[in-house]
Image (cartoon, rainbow, N blue to C red; front, side):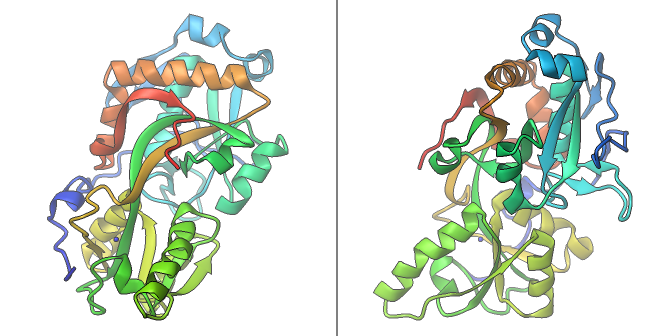
Length: 318
């Protein structure tokens, strides 16, 4: 994300969740998927979440009238969002479950629609969605057009083939190699920025191969078209743990970056046209932090360590 690290290591141990318990629900309107929890409350990750009348009243009038928050999400991007069954619309994942918990607390439905990652922010700007939940890194560039409510903190990791045949240990080992990454992500920016380090050390720059979806980059890694993929640390650990029963990939652990490279806040992006929604989500998230629901949702997907202790707004560190 050193010589091939076993998946029982500390950073991957937090990704050891193997059961994919699913919040039931499917078939949102307007192409949405999932979102079946009742607005009055529901059980998510073993926790019963109840509606807060004051938070519901704090929502924008159009959201209360519609009874729905339209949410864009990049699917599949495990463990944050994934299809329960290929070809079906039902969703599962950390972001999806958190959306259902927020919806239950706010008394509205969070209706998720799969959207290509590089189209999420433009779609928010165009008013096609009210919010986005897709492990989005809260950074200052994105803050120019959206607001963030931050719920987790993580960095980038390196996913390699099982056994780490290319002996990838750190970002420096990617110099002169073919590396896969999803387009328009923080990981792509990290790779581009690291090219200067490659040059300064007298090595060739990495041959960066971009893909529209994380799943496409994984296919390239499986087929040997790239020797590594740079992806969020939780996603890399989840893939290493679960793909082909844990026999497809390894997570390269850099002891100097245990939380991943450039660890930063991940947030729920909300349209700048809906400041009341941002505030309501922030207050609802804090309630879910205070009662332990957020940590339990993260723990369900093996990543309890990324849950924040305070629901901050626009807490970018870049």
